[in-house]
Length: 292
Length: 338
Image (cartoon, rainbow over all chains, first blue to last red; front, side, top):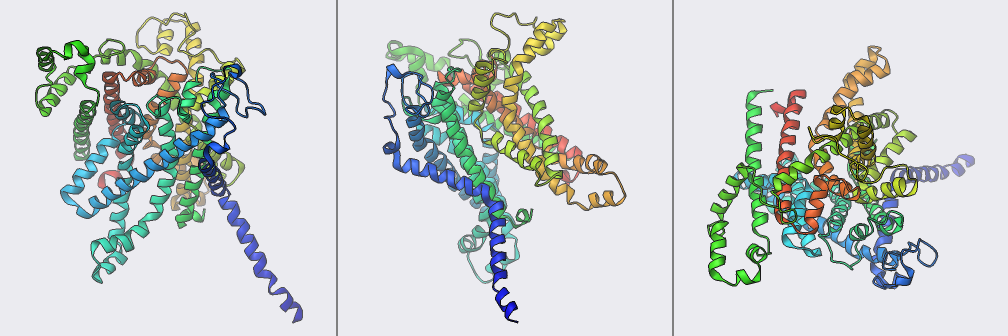
């Protein structure tokens, strides 16, 4: 009896521990993703004070130096410190990626919701416009719009938003349509809730899961596409440090791989981080895949 | 597949193509750069009669919808305007560069299928094994790495560092291309019986094709794995196993055939990815295809060339998607009934 009492409290502790470990095993990738994203967040907040050199400090006596303890990522063809430029490049690439997804997301979800609720001609027109934008390979259309608008960060973001919203419009419309026919929504309506309240209190919370996962995954896509535009010379103007533009500037320096390689590695780390996070969120929000 | 479905899909595609021309026309029309200023120069644009004649000559004095009709009419003759950089009709430029991209894209697609499908199947069958983990890792990196960076690293490593890859380009510098038949060097060199050129072409193609295939391989692996996992849960798989079929027979005859249907619908996505990727890959590998032409046009803001490529690529994209939809409906009759 005494023995049993002494053992009893031990069992739940073991259970909790193994449960936590199991959860960690399942979620270690999203955790790593969150840590990488947080690290970049700190870099962005601290900004120039973290960089060992000025981003545009030209030193022609120190051109194309390989990575060393003095220049962690080496120097470029003008003797600028690649490490400092990569750190400060985050201030452009990350916020633009987030901005594209945020603005495109708001626009797309709004348009999708209007289409789902209005129905009829309005829905038809909105969805056909979305289809036409989706009828182009994204980068190619973004390139055309950015080129038409002229070089610059603002225009690059604008062109990305222009190609970004349709996929969200389609998803939000279909999610809302599915939810609208659910019994709990009919019940809410039968209780006399208006369309806005039904949408805000019942439909959106239930449709939000897949949407949030897609938005998170898409931050990575947006960062890649933005850096692609700037690789094409349609983003920020030199000498602004931006990752895609830096890779482009060093692309002929095959034997000085660090000039292009390091900023590209920065892009990879950020995109991986958001993909880990997005995958984790999707698994976590979707009970069906949680069992897998 | 019902006739009604086919007609409806083709009709929708034609309408979409028209809408696509309208989008490109509008984008081109709202260029902030004044075409008159840039084409005529300062002196001529200060004289009103020259400006008026120029506007009348190019139909710029007409209302917008008439200008669009003129644009469509020209388009029906294959007139996409003249490139500012090359001073040649844009369509001629596109015709010249398309074969290189077609060759590269085809090879990359074959590579992506050859690697992505087996990898996805193995990952699903041996779930949570090291194969599964590495397959997921490979596909994640493939999807996350920017193509232009992957291309650069591959070139720096295999050409600059290890010196086992040939120089960038379709052939070695100064080498004669095979006599023109199709524009595809692999085909043309074989037709000419020139095995040396065939080998050289293939050697120059391998590295850019692997880089170009990376993203698509990632997507195909992911989709195959997910779809295979779903299929393996189905009752008919249990039935097949219960009948005593060998495990690989169950996988090949019952599971894979059904699991590949969603992979097949990736056709359109893959095409879009290949073209976006081609812009980056061809630029890094100095590969004279449509992608590099698009890059060069973008850099100098050669607007007629950019709109021309956008339109052509968009139209082909619509046709690819139509093809995917129709064959999908042929494979899976449930689509039509929906």
